[in-house]
Image (tube, rainbow, N blue to C red):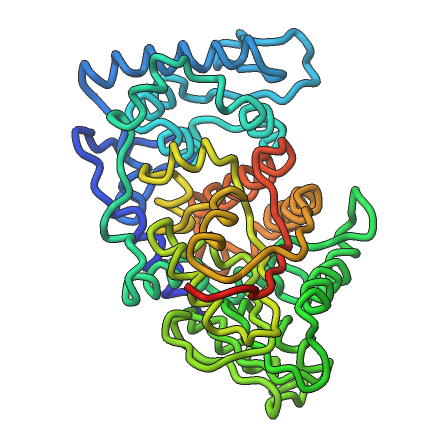
Amino acid sequence: MPIGLRASHSAAAGRARESEPHVSLDTTATQAGTIDATRWPGVAKVPAGPIAALSAKVATSLLHRAAERLPLRLAYPDGSVIGAADPTLPTLVLHDPARLARRIGHTGLIGFGESYMAGEWTSDDLAGVLTAFATSVADLVPRTLQRMRPIALARQPRTQHNSRDQARRNIAEHYDLSNELFAEFLDETMTYSSALFDQLPATAQQLGDAQRRKIDRLLDCANVGPGSRVLEIGTGWGELCLRAAERGAHIRSVTLSTEQQRLATERVVAAGLSDRVDIDLCDYRDVEGRYDAVISIEMIEAVGYAFWPTYFKTLDTLVTPGGRVAIQAITMPHSRMLASRNTHTWIQKYIFPGGLLPSTEAILGLTERHTSLRTVDMFALGGHYAETLRLWRERFVERRNSLSALGFDDVFHRMWELYLAYSEAGFRSGYLDVYQWTFAPTGGRW
């Protein structure tokens, strides 16, 4: 069994075992085949009963409302189509509209995602359909129903709260799936964050250089050079460590992923840079010392809303008075962040347990209230992330047979294809953005 395969099975099963009250178990064959109810109970279960039937009617009405307002089409099994007449527009193909409606009526976007995982709907342009939805996400649901959001939607489970022990489990759910899995769709740098291309649109051949360009820009913003003492929070698979050490810096990198630590360490040893790089399995809250540069790429998204003040206070404490803090952070609109900070989403249930995207307003407010860190540079690269995700998704889909050989089943494949397309749509629509954000400690420390 390949390295990480056991982790992939246990992680998928662990996510799927969350309870779903008031639903009946249905393991009959779907468009995509029989669902393994032991491994994927949340996907095998379809809501039943009179309440589910009523909520399904509401969900169907909302789907039709979306098709009539957005540049997309709904195609039904009987050949009928709802929406624009233009056949070139992205089409959501409904294989089992009744099940899709019951899932959406029961758990909203979680049900929408689980229905795709079950093969109950597909699309000729998955990212296009999701981009159309993301462009008008705030207007699709009538205001009367939006006011019921805090009551109707599930709240985040307390079990995902990012205490030190739980944070390690949450990280393992995603990053310890399998190094081989990530190697199938990432470029040779094994960098799992937005690239920075020299031109858009981009090609797969440009991805490795674009990742190095992204890292080099962040290192430049943090003034990393010969002799710099650097702390990286969130190792990834080691590319930033390598590039910082090649500049003559001494870098300590911390991660909660045992798989990432293992491979990143191997890469450092192979590059002959072990004398300049230390990679530790350590929670960022337990790091001590002071560093000329503190760098953290797309780490805040996994921290959790309750721990954002702790995260920024820690960055502030660890940087020297004349140093720099440089982060790369994915952001969402402030109003949507406030609306979703306590709810449970499909991404949290199946992809990133315990995570939440901040807004730019939240980051500015947190640093101003809790730290001496002040912004000295902001650089947006949302369009570059849309292209990065497109390239990842295309390669992921191409490698379906390789992923199956690693032990990842069809439900997992559809889940990750949806995750990558969902994320791409967020950036392509402008609903999401990503910033390289540089801070300097100024004034007093609180």
